[in-house]
Amino acid sequence: LAKTTQPISMDSYEGQEVNITCSHNNIATNDYITWYQQFPSQGPRFIIQGYKTKVTNEVASLFIPADRKSSTLSLPRVSLSDTAVYYCLVGDYNNDMRFGAGTRLTVKP
Amino acid sequence: DAGITQSPRHKVTETGTPVTLRCHQTENHRYMYWYRQDPGHGLRLIHYSYGVKDTDKGEVSDGYSVSRSKTEDFLLTLESATSSQTSVYFCAISEIPGQGSTDTQYFGPGTRLTVL
Image 1: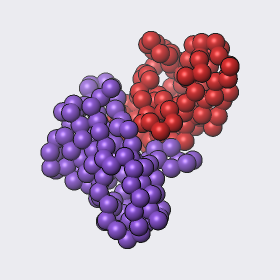
Image 2: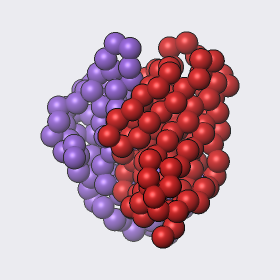
Image 3: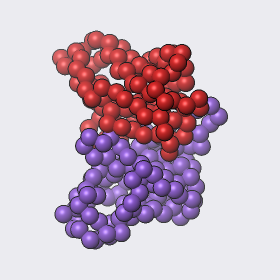
């Protein structure tokens, strides 16, 4: 199973762009990279998924370099409501992925 | 939001008693999962199901059993609850992974279980 490493916590201010990097040195050829967001007292919510290069949706962008050993979740112009825990997962099947401790993002006014 | 409910939402029980948590979905998704979440550990997979009566163990399955007699219901049972099983339990569902992607998981609201 590919293991992921991400910062335990990050602080930012409203309106800034936030980049959270995840390391996954042992990623396998068939593995996808998926990010989830979790607010207190709620279950995680899917944000974005990618295999290589760049993926963008209405919420975030995901940058994946050619060697795929890391990935960066980019949140543009964060607001207070983006304060949450963000999880990076790697795997090719949902039951094969591990959530880890995630990155606790705190957005300050 | 995906139609997933969990019951009960909160439960306090005593060590040694049996406990059953229920996850109910209205999405007709094939896959269902049970996770537990503890401080510092993120979410850890307990058991999952890939169809009616088809289940398999996850990362932390000891002390837990599951059953799935209908597509919409996935039950998690603690045969004899211990204090180490005090946690928040989340149920999740997903559709059959499409070719070239893992599909996404949709999570329920969680059940907070306290074992005294």
